Length: 263
Image (tube, rainbow, N blue to C red; front, side, top):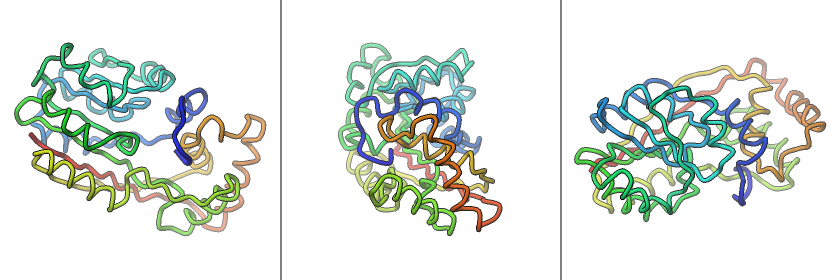
């Protein structure tokens, strides 16, 4: 989120923007996770902080079952509507609820726990320790980030977008959502300290961006309190269009970081 997380920070219309405008994950990400944890059609994976299911849907064809878990009911409702896969189940809960899963899935039953673009909301050190008892041998935890925030990228158009947002919100923007190198190093160190074998890779791809996609992506990162009223959103989008128009066709170099800890 652009500001501090609050209760139901991803509720209401924000969850709709999240589903419509947050990028999905390329098959190469599922390939990497399948290789790292030797996933098979007999395996069960937990996608923790699944949001509207962008990573959940990519994992579903690779394994026997995926559990998508998130603390926001609106996000789960969007995920359920967008995911026809019969081997996906949706659970209401957060990282602090994982111990309650042990009687349900059994110790040593999960092949992997994935956390995609959500670890910055969690107590990662406690999570890495708690997860170990749920994992089968050779299983592990994966921290996945789906590119840097649109307003913090190293491009001229991103800098212009950052100015628009800072003016609108009345505060500088600096939250990286765990995508920065310092956060990645901190997560890697914590995985190692918890006894995991740590590996990291980056999967990159280039994608075009429209102004509507940029505005929708921004709205998906706002809390319901920050989201402009419906009648004000066209004007906000026009401000973004005017600010970014000097930069011509817009493209984003997306870097998906996949940090894995194998048991």
